[in-house]
Image: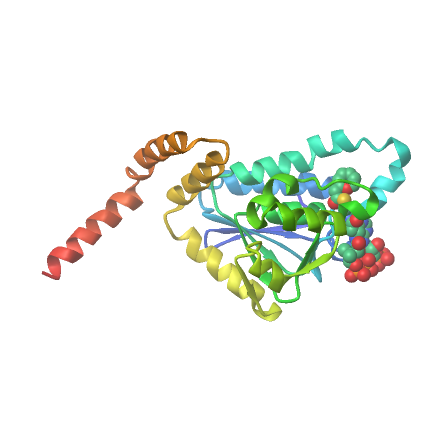
Length: 258
Ligand code: LHQ
């Protein structure tokens, strides 16, 4: 698939997906949703890719749904169907791809753009980035996974307040609340995120993917079930060449240092 609304590159084991409608603050139209889904599938299937980096071009990460497209459709815009065929597919895909997804939040992440940022496994934010649950400004409830993902990161009270006030949450507060992993000066964002993604892609990639599966699964499991999942998945992780070699080299180093 040729891309018109995003950029896609693979370098040093990292697939970088860049939302690329900067004049519209990377608002999602139907084409951009389809292209991002295609790019994630491509990155998931590519054995040379060990980590995925998602960012936005220009001054925003994403302003969410392109409202011009919604307005053009008038009263007949099929919101439920649009969510099921678009954002819901994307969010489900992001949380089930067994490769780490790192979002480099370069500016405002609003509405569905915030949901997509939350569906990444880690977020590194620029110091001038911010999050906004703008949905209620247009009389909507949060969507794109926000109701599931956000209370788990920052707790119900803070998430609910963000939803009903639609206030701009600056990166520094997002860090304090656990919504982002770190905040860096804007000019260092891409360098930091690319270096972190490349280091991740060079690590125990199968274990990183299985960790994601185990953690997401645990949210609908009892402790006993989660322990069972850990035992099953550790069988797989423990037999990977990465694990076997790492254990062997630990033992060899111990022997040689005695
Ligand atoms: C935009 C947008 C945008 C189009 C900026 N669309 N053009 C799911 C299913 C179905 C229906 C609805 O929604 C959903 C999920 C959702 O995502 S709902 C939430 C949709 N998003 C919004 O309500 C955010 C709308 N945008 C804003 O409130 C502001 O643009 C923010 C606060 C993000 C940034 O404000 P400013 O920094 O002042 O920028 P700006 O407003 O001047 O925007 C710059 C340009 O981008 C401008 O275009 P123009 O041609 O005049 O330069 C905006 O019209 C365009 N733009 N967001 N979502």
